[in-house]
Length: 65
Image 1 (cartoon, rainbow, N blue to C red):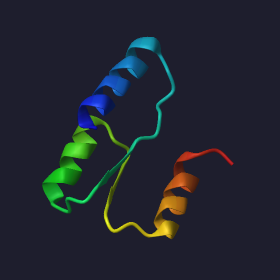
Image 2: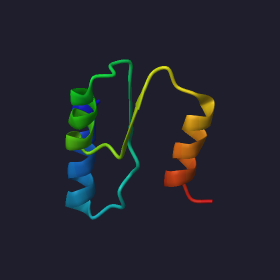
Image 3: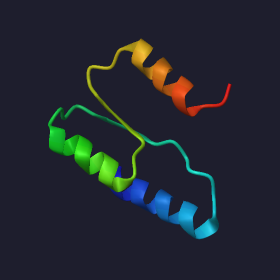
Image 4: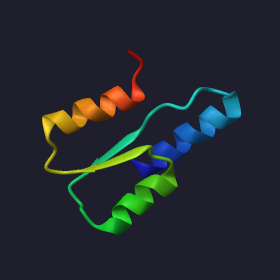
């Protein structure tokens, strides 16, 4: 996931593309994991268990109406 995120961010920069929202989802709740996700270029981080409302809130934040 983090390698793919870095690759996507590189392509966006190289091709002048609009930033794609990337949300990391993991079962690992260690703070280091969130730092790794953000360093790789993720926009948001969620750890399991996930509440349905949380997913909708994140979608509202990153998706157009």
